[in-house]
Length: 350
Image 1 (cartoon, rainbow, N blue to C red):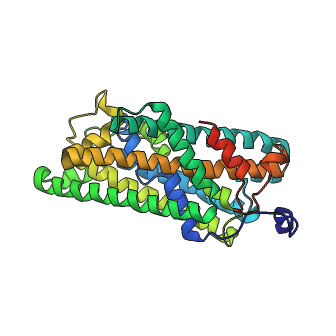
Image 2 (cartoon, rainbow, N blue to C red):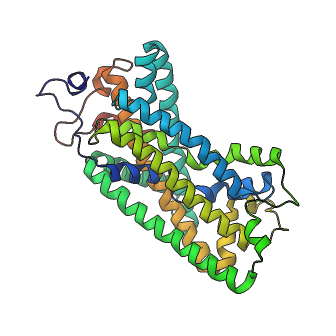
Image 3 (tube, helix red, strand yellow):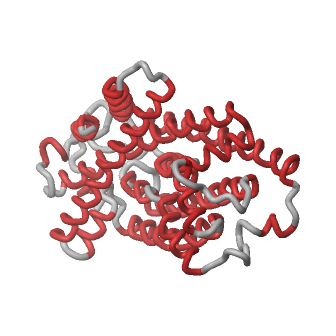
């Protein structure tokens, strides 16, 4: 297997230079520490306020999926993720279908993120046209992904720290507001988990079907299997730990948000899609409202970079296995040791 992946000694190939913490940071970035903020209002309305419960149920379900990915990576430590697993275990033709389905998802993610970031940037600097921001963000993501795996790792670490600090700021302001203005009772503290006045298993499960979006993207960790030290161990650990970290962090965020927002005030249109930033405005005023808006822009930019990273590795694996033309897709740049052609193709897609 290792000989097949590596090729001859003279052939440029992906370098195994990433450690476990690199994988975890990558997973957190592609999912985003702010993941529950975008869907908070929708889930709250569907689940009748039981957002914490839906996040918890979704985490348990996604952990089983994460373990499955990790166990498959032990057997097939290759960059193709589910494409490689299905091709090897079932049938190359089925793997081809899975690979293309994954590729559409990986290509769509950077496009959505670039569009969202461009629109958010226009909200901050309205005089600059949308097209300028779209090109600028696409070029930035592409440039960073061409600089090699270590550069991507450092950028991911910086973005992760920045977003985590903002989450901590929100939690601090939220706790201050709850203690000073809400004065919660014991019933209030349990309400985000279970409110007998509004609880419905049907509503909770419907909300859970949306809450799973909080964890979407962790499978991208398995696309790095050829660039990580000890992939048979670290892919499994990183995938499971990423789900746990995101799950716990998400539960804490929505728990504070639910305590800060009045239980008898559901999120009505048009604020339902941006409900979390309105909670931020309640607990921290206009500054936290704008700061959180800017942070979501950074988070989506980080997700675009990470998704482009994963897409280029998937295309490389498909090119190497002749599911896509070996040239240009199955080629590694001899200097930067990245699938440069694929990075440029994904970067040109938006």
